[in-house]
Length: 313
Image 1: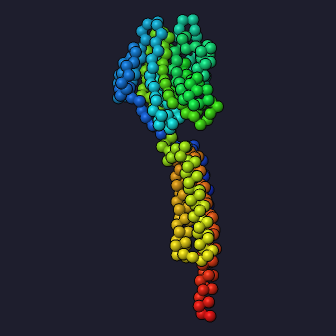
Image 2: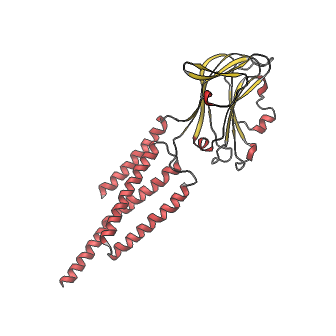
Image 3: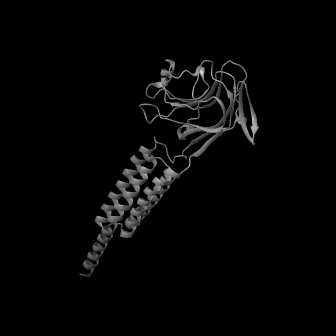
Protein backbone atom coordinates (compact mmCIF):
# COMPACT_ATOMS: atom_id res chain seq x y z
CA UNK A 1 0.00 0.00 0.00
CA UNK A 2 2.87 2.37 0.74
CA UNK A 3 4.29 1.66 -2.70
CA UNK A 4 0.91 2.48 -4.21
CA UNK A 5 0.83 5.88 -2.47
CA UNK A 6 4.40 6.60 -3.53
CA UNK A 7 3.50 5.71 -7.10
CA UNK A 8 0.57 8.11 -7.04
CA UNK A 9 2.69 10.97 -5.70
CA UNK A 10 5.34 10.26 -8.32
CA UNK A 11 2.65 10.29 -11.02
CA UNK A 12 1.43 13.67 -9.74
CA UNK A 13 4.94 15.18 -9.90
CA UNK A 14 5.50 13.81 -13.39
CA UNK A 15 2.14 15.15 -14.59
CA UNK A 16 2.93 18.64 -13.26
CA UNK A 17 6.30 18.68 -15.01
CA UNK A 18 4.74 17.39 -18.20
CA UNK A 19 2.11 20.12 -18.07
CA UNK A 20 4.76 22.84 -17.93
CA UNK A 21 6.61 21.34 -20.89
CA UNK A 22 3.47 20.68 -22.95
CA UNK A 23 2.26 24.27 -22.51
CA UNK A 24 5.47 25.41 -24.21
CA UNK A 25 5.64 22.90 -27.05
CA UNK A 26 2.00 22.15 -27.79
CA UNK A 27 1.04 23.72 -31.14
CA UNK A 28 -2.28 25.57 -31.42
CA UNK A 29 -5.17 23.63 -32.87
CA UNK A 30 -6.92 24.75 -36.05
CA UNK A 31 -10.56 25.13 -35.07
CA UNK A 32 -11.86 26.25 -38.44
CA UNK A 33 -10.56 27.34 -41.85
CA UNK A 34 -12.59 29.98 -43.66
CA UNK A 35 -11.90 29.22 -47.30
CA UNK A 36 -12.91 32.00 -49.66
CA UNK A 37 -14.47 29.64 -52.16
CA UNK A 38 -16.78 28.30 -49.47
CA UNK A 39 -17.98 31.69 -48.23
CA UNK A 40 -21.25 32.84 -49.72
CA UNK A 41 -20.68 36.57 -49.08
CA UNK A 42 -20.07 38.82 -52.06
CA UNK A 43 -16.99 41.00 -51.75
CA UNK A 44 -16.89 44.45 -53.32
CA UNK A 45 -14.27 45.00 -56.06
CA UNK A 46 -12.82 41.55 -55.51
CA UNK A 47 -12.66 38.08 -56.94
CA UNK A 48 -11.66 34.62 -55.78
CA UNK A 49 -8.71 33.18 -57.69
CA UNK A 50 -6.49 30.12 -57.34
CA UNK A 51 -2.79 30.52 -56.56
CA UNK A 52 -0.60 27.46 -56.01
CA UNK A 53 -3.73 25.38 -55.53
CA UNK A 54 -5.07 27.66 -52.77
CA UNK A 55 -8.14 29.86 -53.08
CA UNK A 56 -7.12 33.50 -52.69
CA UNK A 57 -9.28 36.57 -52.29
CA UNK A 58 -8.03 39.34 -54.57
CA UNK A 59 -9.19 42.84 -53.63
CA UNK A 60 -8.36 45.50 -56.20
CA UNK A 61 -9.04 49.21 -55.94
CA UNK A 62 -8.41 50.90 -59.32
CA UNK A 63 -9.28 54.50 -58.43
CA UNK A 64 -8.65 57.10 -55.74
CA UNK A 65 -11.90 56.43 -53.93
CA UNK A 66 -11.70 54.63 -50.61
CA UNK A 67 -12.75 50.99 -50.39
CA UNK A 68 -13.82 49.09 -47.28
CA UNK A 69 -14.46 45.32 -47.48
CA UNK A 70 -15.93 43.20 -44.69
CA UNK A 71 -13.90 40.01 -44.89
CA UNK A 72 -15.41 37.86 -42.18
CA UNK A 73 -17.95 37.91 -39.36
CA UNK A 74 -17.94 35.10 -36.77
CA UNK A 75 -20.93 34.70 -34.45
CA UNK A 76 -20.54 31.00 -33.58
CA UNK A 77 -20.29 31.19 -29.78
CA UNK A 78 -18.85 27.68 -29.37
CA UNK A 79 -15.97 28.52 -31.72
CA UNK A 80 -15.36 31.89 -30.09
CA UNK A 81 -15.18 30.30 -26.63
CA UNK A 82 -12.41 27.96 -27.78
CA UNK A 83 -10.52 30.40 -30.01
CA UNK A 84 -7.53 32.49 -29.00
CA UNK A 85 -6.04 33.54 -32.37
CA UNK A 86 -7.22 34.48 -35.85
CA UNK A 87 -4.52 34.05 -38.50
CA UNK A 88 -4.05 34.57 -42.24
CA UNK A 89 -1.45 35.28 -44.93
CA UNK A 90 -1.55 38.42 -47.07
CA UNK A 91 0.43 40.27 -49.73
CA UNK A 92 -0.14 43.63 -51.41
CA UNK A 93 0.86 45.39 -54.62
CA UNK A 94 1.12 49.14 -55.22
CA UNK A 95 -1.06 50.05 -52.24
CA UNK A 96 -1.12 53.83 -51.85
CA UNK A 97 -1.78 55.98 -48.84
CA UNK A 98 -4.32 58.75 -48.90
CA UNK A 99 -2.80 61.95 -50.29
CA UNK A 100 -0.79 64.01 -47.81
CA UNK A 101 -0.12 61.17 -45.33
CA UNK A 102 3.09 59.23 -44.80
CA UNK A 103 2.97 56.29 -42.44
CA UNK A 104 5.59 53.59 -41.71
CA UNK A 105 4.35 50.14 -42.74
CA UNK A 106 3.41 47.37 -40.31
CA UNK A 107 2.63 49.50 -37.27
CA UNK A 108 0.66 47.42 -34.82
CA UNK A 109 -1.82 48.83 -32.35
CA UNK A 110 -4.25 47.13 -30.06
CA UNK A 111 -6.99 47.33 -27.41
CA UNK A 112 -8.68 50.58 -28.36
CA UNK A 113 -12.28 51.03 -27.36
CA UNK A 114 -14.85 52.12 -29.89
CA UNK A 115 -15.55 55.19 -27.75
CA UNK A 116 -11.97 56.37 -28.17
CA UNK A 117 -12.09 55.71 -31.89
CA UNK A 118 -15.06 58.06 -32.11
CA UNK A 119 -12.96 60.80 -30.51
CA UNK A 120 -10.36 60.59 -33.24
CA UNK A 121 -8.01 57.94 -31.87
CA UNK A 122 -6.97 55.81 -34.82
CA UNK A 123 -8.60 57.53 -37.82
CA UNK A 124 -8.79 54.84 -40.50
CA UNK A 125 -9.59 57.08 -43.45
CA UNK A 126 -6.06 58.05 -44.48
CA UNK A 127 -4.08 54.82 -44.65
CA UNK A 128 -4.63 51.16 -45.66
CA UNK A 129 -5.21 48.79 -42.78
CA UNK A 130 -6.72 45.51 -41.65
CA UNK A 131 -9.06 45.86 -38.67
CA UNK A 132 -10.16 43.22 -36.19
CA UNK A 133 -13.06 43.89 -33.80
CA UNK A 134 -14.35 41.93 -30.81
CA UNK A 135 -17.84 42.86 -29.71
CA UNK A 136 -18.71 41.92 -26.14
CA UNK A 137 -22.17 40.93 -24.88
CA UNK A 138 -24.39 43.31 -22.88
CA UNK A 139 -23.65 41.54 -19.59
CA UNK A 140 -19.94 42.40 -19.85
CA UNK A 141 -18.61 45.42 -17.99
CA UNK A 142 -19.69 48.42 -20.03
CA UNK A 143 -22.12 46.42 -22.14
CA UNK A 144 -22.22 46.86 -25.88
CA UNK A 145 -20.00 49.94 -25.71
CA UNK A 146 -16.89 47.83 -25.21
CA UNK A 147 -15.25 46.70 -28.45
CA UNK A 148 -11.66 45.58 -28.44
CA UNK A 149 -9.92 46.67 -31.61
CA UNK A 150 -6.69 45.60 -33.27
CA UNK A 151 -5.20 46.61 -36.59
CA UNK A 152 -2.29 46.38 -38.99
CA UNK A 153 -1.11 49.20 -41.25
CA UNK A 154 0.44 48.31 -44.61
CA UNK A 155 1.33 50.05 -47.88
CA UNK A 156 3.43 49.71 -51.00
CA UNK A 157 4.31 46.28 -52.35
CA UNK A 158 4.96 43.42 -49.94
CA UNK A 159 5.28 39.69 -50.48
CA UNK A 160 3.34 37.02 -48.61
CA UNK A 161 3.54 37.44 -44.87
CA UNK A 162 1.70 35.91 -41.92
CA UNK A 163 -0.56 38.07 -39.75
CA UNK A 164 -2.51 37.26 -36.62
CA UNK A 165 -4.73 38.83 -34.00
CA UNK A 166 -5.07 37.51 -30.46
CA UNK A 167 -8.51 37.28 -28.89
CA UNK A 168 -8.89 39.10 -25.60
CA UNK A 169 -11.29 38.88 -22.74
CA UNK A 170 -13.49 41.83 -21.91
CA UNK A 171 -11.82 44.63 -19.92
CA UNK A 172 -12.57 44.55 -16.17
CA UNK A 173 -14.20 41.13 -16.52
CA UNK A 174 -11.76 38.34 -17.28
CA UNK A 175 -14.52 35.75 -17.35
CA UNK A 176 -16.35 37.21 -20.36
CA UNK A 177 -15.70 36.38 -23.99
CA UNK A 178 -16.75 38.39 -27.02
CA UNK A 179 -19.87 37.19 -28.83
CA UNK A 180 -18.91 38.48 -32.27
CA UNK A 181 -15.65 38.71 -34.23
CA UNK A 182 -15.31 40.89 -37.30
CA UNK A 183 -12.43 41.30 -39.74
CA UNK A 184 -12.38 44.03 -42.39
CA UNK A 185 -9.89 45.68 -44.73
CA UNK A 186 -9.70 49.32 -45.80
CA UNK A 187 -7.95 50.86 -48.82
CA UNK A 188 -8.06 54.69 -48.93
CA UNK A 189 -6.71 54.75 -52.49
CA UNK A 190 -5.63 52.43 -55.29
CA UNK A 191 -3.86 49.11 -54.79
CA UNK A 192 -4.29 45.35 -54.81
CA UNK A 193 -4.38 42.98 -51.84
CA UNK A 194 -4.31 39.17 -51.84
CA UNK A 195 -5.50 37.11 -48.85
CA UNK A 196 -5.21 33.38 -48.30
CA UNK A 197 -7.86 31.51 -46.26
CA UNK A 198 -8.37 32.70 -42.69
CA UNK A 199 -7.68 30.28 -39.85
CA UNK A 200 -9.25 30.33 -36.41
CA UNK A 201 -6.86 28.79 -33.87
CA UNK A 202 -7.48 27.80 -30.29
CA UNK A 203 -7.46 25.11 -27.67
CA UNK A 204 -8.84 21.61 -27.89
CA UNK A 205 -12.40 20.93 -26.75
CA UNK A 206 -12.71 21.15 -22.98
CA UNK A 207 -13.98 18.09 -21.12
CA UNK A 208 -16.56 20.24 -19.37
CA UNK A 209 -17.42 23.92 -19.29
CA UNK A 210 -16.47 26.52 -16.70
CA UNK A 211 -20.08 26.67 -15.53
CA UNK A 212 -20.21 22.90 -14.99
CA UNK A 213 -16.97 22.77 -12.98
CA UNK A 214 -18.49 24.03 -9.65
CA UNK A 215 -21.24 21.40 -9.91
CA UNK A 216 -18.68 18.64 -10.37
CA UNK A 217 -16.91 19.71 -7.18
CA UNK A 218 -20.15 20.30 -5.27
CA UNK A 219 -21.48 16.84 -6.13
CA UNK A 220 -18.29 14.77 -6.22
CA UNK A 221 -16.84 16.14 -2.97
CA UNK A 222 -19.79 15.25 -0.70
CA UNK A 223 -20.14 11.84 -2.35
CA UNK A 224 -16.52 10.97 -1.62
CA UNK A 225 -16.79 12.41 1.90
CA UNK A 226 -19.99 10.53 2.75
CA UNK A 227 -18.62 7.30 1.27
CA UNK A 228 -15.46 7.63 3.34
CA UNK A 229 -17.47 8.29 6.49
CA UNK A 230 -19.72 5.28 5.86
CA UNK A 231 -16.78 2.97 5.23
CA UNK A 232 -15.04 4.23 8.37
CA UNK A 233 -18.16 3.68 10.49
CA UNK A 234 -18.72 0.16 9.13
CA UNK A 235 -15.09 -0.83 9.63
CA UNK A 236 -15.14 0.56 13.16
CA UNK A 237 -18.17 -1.61 13.94
CA UNK A 238 -16.62 -4.58 12.19
CA UNK A 239 -19.57 -4.97 9.81
CA UNK A 240 -19.72 -5.97 6.12
CA UNK A 241 -16.01 -6.78 5.96
CA UNK A 242 -15.93 -8.09 2.39
CA UNK A 243 -18.10 -5.28 0.99
CA UNK A 244 -16.23 -2.51 2.85
CA UNK A 245 -12.76 -3.71 1.88
CA UNK A 246 -13.83 -4.21 -1.76
CA UNK A 247 -15.29 -0.70 -2.00
CA UNK A 248 -12.21 0.67 -0.25
CA UNK A 249 -9.93 -0.90 -2.86
CA UNK A 250 -12.21 0.41 -5.60
CA UNK A 251 -11.83 3.96 -4.23
CA UNK A 252 -8.04 3.67 -4.30
CA UNK A 253 -8.15 2.44 -7.89
CA UNK A 254 -10.52 5.33 -8.74
CA UNK A 255 -7.96 7.71 -7.26
CA UNK A 256 -5.29 6.30 -9.57
CA UNK A 257 -7.66 6.81 -12.50
CA UNK A 258 -8.32 10.41 -11.41
CA UNK A 259 -4.58 11.13 -11.33
CA UNK A 260 -4.13 9.45 -14.71
CA UNK A 261 -6.92 11.64 -16.11
CA UNK A 262 -5.18 14.64 -14.52
CA UNK A 263 -1.98 13.72 -16.35
CA UNK A 264 -3.85 13.55 -19.67
CA UNK A 265 -5.68 16.83 -18.97
CA UNK A 266 -2.46 18.70 -18.25
CA UNK A 267 -0.69 17.19 -21.24
CA UNK A 268 -3.52 18.20 -23.61
CA UNK A 269 -3.79 21.76 -22.31
CA UNK A 270 -7.11 21.51 -20.49
CA UNK A 271 -7.93 24.63 -18.40
CA UNK A 272 -7.55 24.82 -14.63
CA UNK A 273 -11.27 24.29 -13.95
CA UNK A 274 -10.92 20.86 -15.60
CA UNK A 275 -7.68 19.75 -13.97
CA UNK A 276 -8.41 21.04 -10.43
CA UNK A 277 -11.32 18.64 -9.62
CA UNK A 278 -9.26 15.73 -10.96
CA UNK A 279 -6.35 16.81 -8.75
CA UNK A 280 -8.48 17.09 -5.59
CA UNK A 281 -10.39 13.85 -6.17
CA UNK A 282 -7.21 11.97 -7.06
CA UNK A 283 -5.25 13.17 -4.04
CA UNK A 284 -8.09 12.52 -1.58
CA UNK A 285 -9.06 9.07 -2.82
CA UNK A 286 -5.48 7.79 -3.05
CA UNK A 287 -3.78 9.32 -0.01
CA UNK A 288 -6.66 9.33 2.48
CA UNK A 289 -8.27 6.04 1.51
CA UNK A 290 -4.88 4.48 0.88
CA UNK A 291 -3.50 5.58 4.26
CA UNK A 292 -6.52 4.41 6.27
CA UNK A 293 -7.02 1.10 4.45
CA UNK A 294 -4.36 -0.83 6.48
CA UNK A 295 -5.88 0.47 9.72
CA UNK A 296 -9.37 -0.61 8.66
CA UNK A 297 -8.17 -4.06 7.61
CA UNK A 298 -6.26 -4.47 10.88
CA UNK A 299 -9.42 -3.47 12.77
CA UNK A 300 -11.38 -6.22 11.02
CA UNK A 301 -8.61 -8.73 11.80
CA UNK A 302 -8.61 -7.78 15.50
CA UNK A 303 -12.38 -8.11 15.74
CA UNK A 304 -12.22 -11.48 13.97
CA UNK A 305 -9.56 -12.72 16.42
CA UNK A 306 -11.69 -11.56 19.36
CA UNK A 307 -14.73 -13.34 17.93
CA UNK A 308 -12.81 -16.59 17.41
CA UNK A 309 -11.31 -16.34 20.90
CA UNK A 310 -14.76 -15.78 22.38
CA UNK A 311 -16.10 -18.85 20.53
CA UNK A 312 -13.24 -20.99 21.80
CA UNK A 313 -13.86 -19.88 25.38
